[in-house]
Length: 238
Image (cartoon, rainbow, N blue to C red):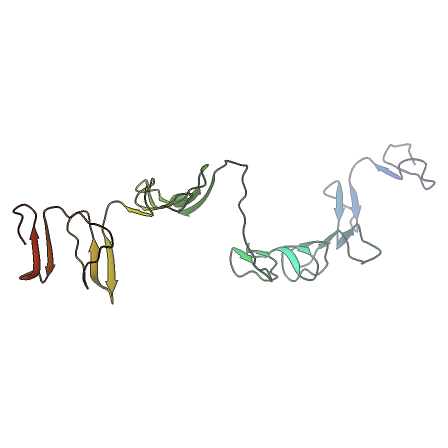
C-alpha cells in the first residue's frame, strides 16, 4: 500500500522489493532503531558451508561472530573453529587463541611473530608507560639504529648502531662496545674480580695484551699493600 508512503512491496522484482519510511522491527512491535531485531541474526549464510558471514547471538549479553557461529563466551570471534581473533568479556584479545589469558595473547603453531613495518626510512617506537607517563621507549630510527631510552633521565641506556657497534649510556658508539658514565665489572659469585674504568682499573688473574697497551702514571700488579710488580712512569722505575 503506497497511499501513506510507509512501505512498498514489489514481489515481481521489477524494482525495489521493500521500501520502508520509518523503523522496522523483527520480533518486536516497537522498533527503537531503523532495524531492530529481537533474537539471533545471521547475514550472508553460505550454502556451501552453512556458516554466516555475520552472526549475532542475543544471549549472554550479546555476542558477534564473523565467519563462525562458535562464540564460546567471547564478545567477538573472527574465524572458523580455530579463531583468528577473539575479544573476551574481560577485554583480553587473543590472536590464534580461543581463551586469551593476557591483555594481548598471541598463539601460532610455527614461529609466531610480531612485525612493525614502516615506510623506507621511517621510525618506529614502542612505549612503556606508568600511570599514563612514558617511562621507557624502544626506538628504531631512520638510520636503522636500535635504542632503549629512559625518559626520566633523557638518555639512551642501550644503543645498537646499524653495523654492530654497541653503546651503554652512549648514543654514538664508535667501537664494538662504548661505555659512558660508569665502569665495566666482571664478577664471580657476586664479587667484582675485574673492573675496567676510566680511572683505576683492577684485574684478577693477570693482565694480557696481545698488541700494545699504554698505561698512564703507574701500573700495580699483585696485592694492594705490597705489589708483586710496580711500574712508575713518572720516575721511570720498576
